Image (cartoon, rainbow, N blue to C red):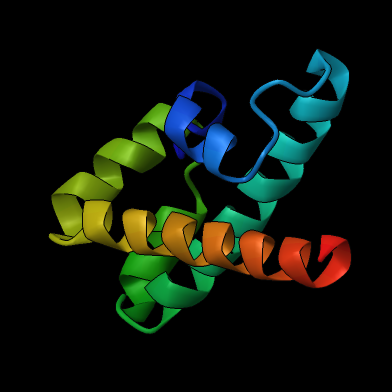
Length: 99
């Protein structure tokens, strides 16, 4: 849903575009997991209880994406903002650690 593995700009910005494939895959999986958790929190503030149950029952990523597009008008902006926040957090902590 987030397309992080295909987002060269994002991967370059956080400094992992040229990382070994196994390292990159692990980091992408962790970032996508975090993004998914942040999306669930954001949606919990926007959806009715019925919508939340309906969305929670979807197990297919494509179906989840289609459902979001149909039921949350600004879902693309929401995802973009989540990824931007994650990128900024990574860069902030990277600077704090690396210097």
